[in-house]
Image (tube, rainbow, N blue to C red):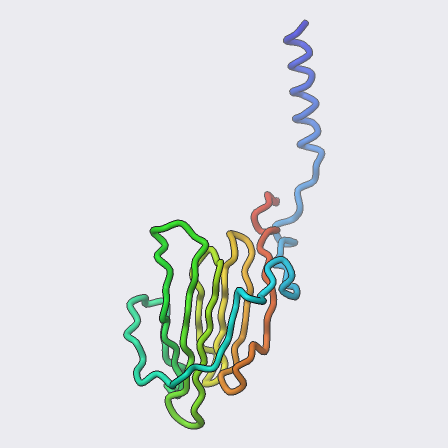
Length: 165
């Protein structure tokens, strides 16, 4: 009798799981919104640099090209996390012009879970992606002339980790 009850419950669970419709994989998406889950206040701090750096640091990670496409601006990764130790981590960068009007900024990113990704879009715009966890990041575009983020959107990759068909 006991085995029959367990078998019946198992069949009901399997039937219930089969009746739940999995979403189409084509319908999965990354959801973008204003930064609300991880507010940027105190986690991303921009300040004018006391002095323009005198050189571009050699980059050991091939993922990062510190120079803008025409080499008129650059960044230095000043503080890079040691991922061999547990997080959360902190990263600091300098962004500065190499020619033309002089601009120099320091940006600190704190309490992130993975590295801060940097990629030049053009001579004055730097794309920055900060990962706060496994499925949540903030995408930023920094304008070197103004010292402002002209784009800041939270990217939630949570839907991409669900099963689909």
